[in-house]
Amino acid sequence: MGRSLRELWDGDEATIGGWCSIPSPFSAELMGRSGFDWVCIDTQHGVIGYDQMMPMLQALSITGTPAFVRVPWNQPDHIMKSLDAGAQGVIVPMVSSAAEAEAVVAAVKYPPRGMRSWGPIRAALDVPDYSPEVANRRTVVAVMIETPGGVENLDAILSVPGVDAVYVGPSDLALGHGMAPTLKVEDPEHERLIEAVVEGCRRHGVVAGIHCDSVETVRRWHAKGYGMFTVGSDAALMRQAATQVVATAFEDGRRAVPKAGQYA
Image 1 (cartoon, rainbow, N blue to C red):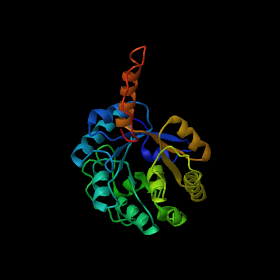
Image 2: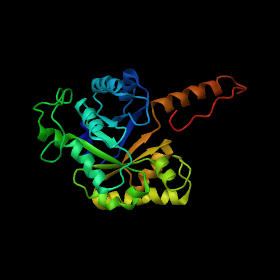
Image 3: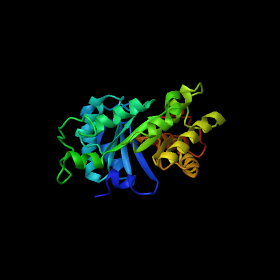
Image 4: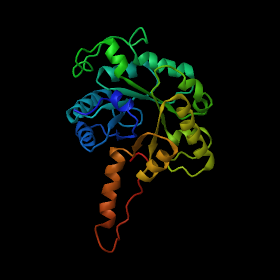
C-alpha cells in the first residue's frame, strides 16, 4: 500500500494527482495504476454521482492510491458522505470567506473539532483502530480559491485551523475577475492572481495546488512555489490520445478532428 494522503501532505515534496470525471470504477482503477500520488473523483463538474463515486473509491483502494473527492458544493451532507465512503480528503469549491472555510473544516472533523456525524461505514474498513481522533488527524482539507472574495479574504481563509491546502481553479478565477475562463494563463492579471494565492499559502504554511492543462504548466507553477498539481482528467486524456491517433494515422495527415476542450 502507498502512503496515506496525510503522509503525503506532511512531506515536503510536490505531488501530482489524477483527475476522474468519467463515472467508471475501471477508469478510476486505471488512473490509480498510472503512478499518480493521489486521485481526485470530481463530483462537481464530472458526470459522477454518489452511487458511482463509491465503487470508484473501492477501485482506488485496490491500487493503494489515496483519494480526494471534489464535492459539488460546500454543504455538510456532500462532505460527510464522501468521507464516510472512504475519501481521505475533500476539495471544496468556491470558498470565499473565513466563515465558509470554517464550515468546511467543521463538516470534515468529528467533535470536539467539528460537527461531523459518526457513521464511517466504509472509511473505517482499512484503518486499524479507527476513531474520531484518528480520522481528524488523517483527513486532508483543501479549499478552492477561485472567486474575487476568496482572493480578497485569502489570509483570513488560510488562518482557519484545519485548512491543509488551497486548490486553484484557474478558469473560475479568471471568470470571476472578468476574464475568459482558461487554464492557459496568458493575461498578466490572471497570472498575478495565481501568484498572489501561492504567496498567501507560503505565509501560512499551507500547500498550494492548481489545476493545469499540460506538464509545461505544471513546471511553470512549480517554479513559482505550487506543490499540488493535476493535469487534465481521465476524459480529457482519453480524448486527446484518441484524436491524436485519428489525426496522425495516415501519412498525408488528411483527417481533421474536433478540438478538445478543458474537460473533455
